Image 1 (spheres, rainbow, N blue to C red):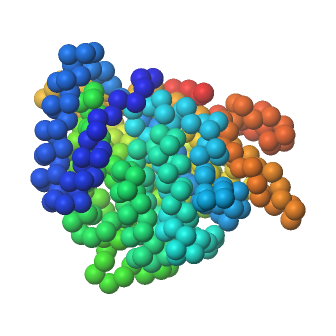
Image 2 (image 1 turned 60 degrees about the horizontal axis):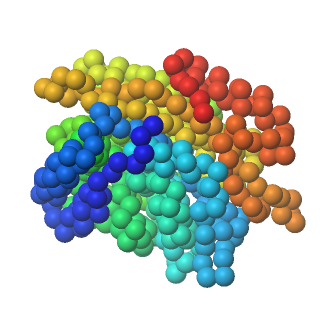
Amino acid sequence: MPSKQKTLCFIFLLFLSACMGQEESTRKGADHASSDRKVTEKETPPPKSITIAAVGDLLIHRPVFEDAKTSSGYNFTPIFTPVKKYLKETTLTVANQETMIGGKELGLSSYPTFNSPYEVGDALKNIGVDVVSIANNHTLDQGEQGIKNAISHWKAISMVYTGAYLNEQDQKNIRVVQTEAGIDVAFLSYTYGTNGIPVPDGKAYLVNLIDKAAIEADIKKAEKLSDAIVVNVHFGDEYERYPNQSQKQTAQMMADAGADVILGHHPHVLQPIERLEGKNGNDALVIYSLGNFLSAQENIYRRIGGILQLEMEKAPKQDKREIIIKNPVFIPTVVDYELNANNIAGRDFRVLPMSKADESVMPDVKSIHNDIRKHMSQWLPELTFK
Ligand SMILES: [Zn+2]
């Protein structure tokens, strides 16, 4: 896989998105990218494809943030060290930040209404995450202020966020990340709901809900602004290892609308991957659930998540808008921890590749790993594993 080949356009786009309308920011972003590309061409020929990595739910339960506490704040980066290389080696990486990083001033909290330290964002930045999906059932846990605080931190660290917004204009601004390969990728994000917490009147921009008309309209806009469309969707039944009918219909609707990659999360366990055909004959790839990437949940399947890596190639015909999704790779991961005095997951949290986990991490780990590989590839025999 090629190493990171992003342009500085992230910062540029974020800056512009803060002060301009959607049309203008994307057009200027594109101009900026093409001048960057010219410079690069003189040095090395640009790659013909890009790679993307995706991870699922980061649920920052109390034992996780207490474990990350330092004398001056919080440091979550060491938790991810064993898997960092899989997130750094791709051109772009996207994560589902399920809990809002509202910061200490709102009071940190765990389930059922989470609030996480800003330093979670810093760790994601450090380990190579470029885009966070923040439309989740926990988006409104700390109300509007939680979202505002979180977004101010995402902006401060130049992280692209999608799915929850500061205002209507921010919501209309489709996130497009440009790459040196000339493949511009749009990132969208939606959730089935917000745990019964009502979206404040007149502030629908605070969180993107799954709504067919809105999704179709966003994808239509994204098609004009990008080469490929990645849709994050928070849906399904918790702890179920297979997608339900509604997930299947939603993913098919997104494929019909023109999504290239559909990244599902919320069930907290892994659900399989498959290819879909959209109504216009377009191809899409869906993972119904990426599982938990980091949490303090202790059930075996809730400790297992994974990193999906994909290659995106532009179809050779320049006149045709088509992206080929190639070489899907899955890296099953497991959350390791030590029990605390109360005999619950309490300290030394680490996210490990399952291939590196031994019996001390999870009893019977080899046969469970084998089962996970079969589970994930059952509808996609071409899937390979690291
Ligand atoms: Zn959820």
